[in-house]
Length: 146
Image (cartoon, rainbow, N blue to C red; front, top):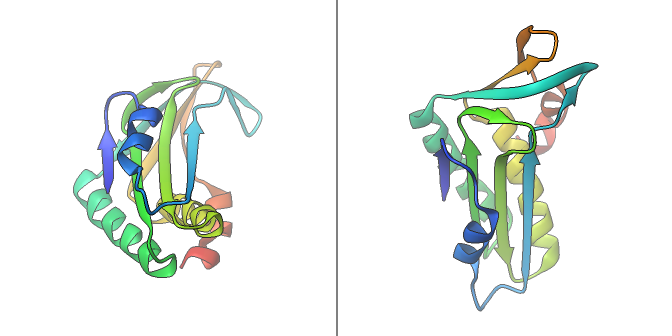
């Protein structure tokens, strides 16, 4: 399951939805808004999302993860709108019978999400400037999640 949220992400509630007696492992990733990026002091972020395509592509991504990492249950939530320092911007949770599959699937999902979903990030800086951010590290990982 994938969703876009304009309200705070609740990792514990999401984790509870993944509990499965067949799962021996759980792995999650939380991406938080940090106060510094590329030498700039950041005061907040804004995410714009083209939700219909993000949901459609996200479902494909999770289905692909399920093929690569069998017996996988996964959920992903990405925020939209204005976020403050410390807010959870993205959450990925995975359960599987074994830890290796859970770790690999979680990494695959967050890396693919950053590359494939139509989600744009704008940073607002202490200086009063702002700018749209391109994730260069995401592009570097494109070969491993394609």
